[in-house]
Every structure is written in C-alpha cells, then in structure tokens.
Image 1 (tube, rainbow over the protein chains, first blue to last red):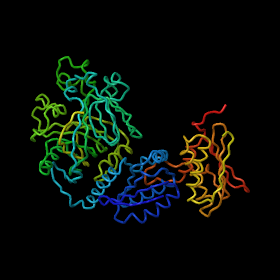
Image 2 (image 1 turned 90 degrees about the vertical axis):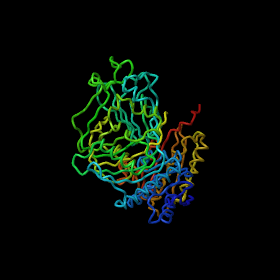
Image 3 (image 1 turned 135 degrees about the vertical axis):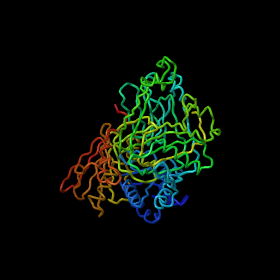
Image 4 (image 1 turned 120 degrees about the vertical axis):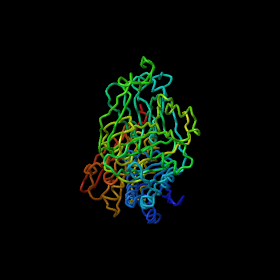
Length: 433
Length: 144
C-alpha cells in the first residue's frame, strides 16, 4: 500500500492508496509511527484510494484513534469508499470513528478541535464575565457567518391557521440544529392532525405528537440516509456553526433562568461583537435547576382554530390549547436544548422585518412590554456526569447516544440551569427556505 | 462452469493476502458472477489472516484454497497445517461498546459469518485445519 503524508493548516494528513488488509495495516503501523509527531493531536486519514478494508485494517485505525485520544486528540477519516464504509458499518465502527465526506470537512473539524484543545489547556486566559450570579467563560470558536433558515410562519401556529398548503416536507439532517412544529408520518393527511413541538439536535429528532398521549417520540436514525422526512408547519434551523462556546457556571444551587442566560449573552454580544444584530441561536448542554414548560396540546390547524379567533395563548383559549407545566421538574438531570432569542433592546433594523415576524411574531399582542422573545426546546436525559469542555457538538452527540431519554418540552423562560456549555451563533441573516 | 473447481496453494504470509484476493476475483469472474466478489474476498481474507497470524503464529506454512460451484453456491475450502484454530470458539465482538472498551478480537470471524451463509470447521491430526464456507450467489442464473 502507498502511504503519503502532508500538512494543511498544521494538521497532519495521511493518504492511503491500495488495500488496507492485515498486510497494509502493518505498513500503515510503521508509517504512522514515523509521521505522527508528539505534538500531533488530530490526524486526517484520507481513505479515498483505499478499495478494501478488513478487520486487520480496522485494528490499526482503532489503535491510532486510541493512542491519539489518550493525548486528547483523534483520527478523522475522509473520502471513505462504499465497500470500506460497509465494512466499518458491519463491524460497528462507523459510529465510533469520526468519518467525514470530504478532506476539507475533516481538516476543518481538526482545526476547530485543535483550537478547543489549546483553549482548554489555557482555560484561565479565556475572557470571562460575571453576570446574574454566574460566571461566563467565552471561547471564540468560529468567525463563520450564521444564518437562520425558516419554514412557515409562527403566527400561523399562534393563531391556529395552518392548512395542508402550509405544511412543508423537510429532510431530516443528522448535523442540523432546529426547532419547530412537526410530525413524522407517511403523508400530510397523516401528520397535520398531530403536529407538535419538535427539535433536531445532536443527530436526533424528538417531537411531541398532539395525539393526546403527551408522550414524546425520540428517534436516532442509525445512519443519516437522508430518507427521514419531517412534515412541518413552522421550522427554524441554524445554517452555520457556533461562533462562541460559552461555559456558564452558576454560583447558587438553583442556577440562573434561561431569561437571565439570554440577557447575559446579549450583553456579552453587545460588548464583544461590533456587528451584533440582536438575534442569536443557542444550543446547549446543561445541568437542570428546574424545568418549566409549555406545549401545544392541539395541532394548530385552521379547522380546529379557536372560535373566538384569538391567539391560542389568549386567556380564554390557553387552558384548552396549551399545556403549561408550572411545577418545577427534572432537577439535576441533563438537558440538551436548542432555541433562538431576539434582543428587543437591540437595533433590529439590519434584519428583514418580514422574516423576523415569521420567526417571532412581533405584534404587540405577542411582545407586550418584553425585553426579549425566546423560543427554546429542551430534551431531558437522566443525569450524565458534567464534563467541562468546549466540544459542544461532540458532547451533545454523546448525550443523545448514551443518555437515557426522559422528556422533550418547549421551555419556558423561567426554566433554570445550574451549569451549561452554550453554543452561541450570532445570526446575520434570516432566509426563507 | 458447473462443477468447476479452482485451487490455489500459497505461502502463509500477510503480503500474499492481495494475491489471494486476486485469486478470488478471478474465480468469481470465471464462475460468471462478480456481484458478491467483495463479500467473498473479505471472508476469505479474514480466514487467511487468522491462519497466518494464529494457526501458523506468523512462522509461515502453506495455505490451500479450493473453490467450487455447487448449484448456485460458491463453496470455498481453506486448509492449513498450523495449530488447531476453530473460529467457532471465538466469542463474538461487542459491536456496541464505546471506544475505550472496543477491540477487534473476534471481528474477523464475525465478518466471515456475517458475509457467508455457512461457515464450518474441521480438524484432522494429519490433514490439519479445514474451514469450509458457503455462500449463495445471487448473481448466478440457474442452469437448466
């Protein structure tokens, strides 16, 4: 087997050509010892010209992964051909190893993880803030532009005005962060009566069907085949990555509310980000202080709309339409959540008004005298030990895959968290899908 | 090619695994189906790797491979004179374990069993190890 090495952005890439059988594995073992230096942590292995992989080849990939992991790194495979990929899947290694479709994606991920590794080592050098009785440590993870992709319009949900024509079909993506109102099923007709609160996060999709059972449906496709389709009447997805990873640790036992958390994030953004436009998305892993939730009980479609034509949140409608959980729940459990928040104190003129309205419904009836509008969905798992680190995407995947699923809810702003790793994206634009 | 039989005798060395793979590809081509060539190559490769590394413990020896078409099945018999090695004695790998508890012990045998329809083993004090693997070839058209 031919083995070559190269460096891009100081990330070592080992390119293989030929058969990665037990013989190829022995050659790779020799070569890897030569190529991988003591200060290499994340290494890309380009499998584009590997036509064949056996358990002997897997053995050497696993050995490299374990050795690098001990230092805090790992291998990233890319361009894996169909038969080697099939062998990895059969052997149960497709979930254990990091596999990327392109060389660029693999290198990009290595660069990001390497920056996180260094920052974790120099933790005390990261900028920190004290707000709302909590400490915020900020790590700038990416300067990439972040955009929200919107389907539908929140006012159709709030006024129960959805018709079949307002229900869109979206492909589930394993890498996407999104919230909305949706359902899984065979057709629009099957789904439209059971649309409910929905979230996609960490490679999973969870939704709360409005079928009267109040039981969320938790789905992790084994492999992202692109075949899982979601019917949705309203959906907001992050197109981009986390700009900042913010680690929050509260000083008190009860923690801080999600409202406090967003307030602090907005303040930090105004201080640090000159181009801050008043809109963020927030993905997080948190230890729960207490969860307060709400959720639609009835699919908000036109034929079921309240007779008084008021919002489903209207005092005469809310009891029938919305399940408000004012009893604190899930103290000490682990939560992963995704949501969006708009800072009504910020100058919002640089964002498209119609698009903002589709996201939040900025009508006075909805805004009142509020300083911000938030929309967050959280998935609760049995408590998993807290690990302070900056690889939020990796942590979310770990929790979703290893955690014991408990519940999924639309979070009220007074939900409290004790500590959290937050992935904040500063939204520069909103686009309709 | 009904009843066709093709044989290979080769030194038990890891560098010969590619020769064995080429031999299997040639056999499959002669039989008239290449649809499952990767699957059969993998099963034979894993079996021969075990022979080289375990039965002969890297000290070398000879591996005999014979292929035969029986109806729509390819039947492959692999023989060696190394230490007795029964794949049936290998416990299945834990495919769900996390990275730290992951090994590749048993993975080769697992793949052989998964890819072939039947794997059987026989040991004879004189003739040594004999492994027989059978797989129905979907790409074969039944000869009338």
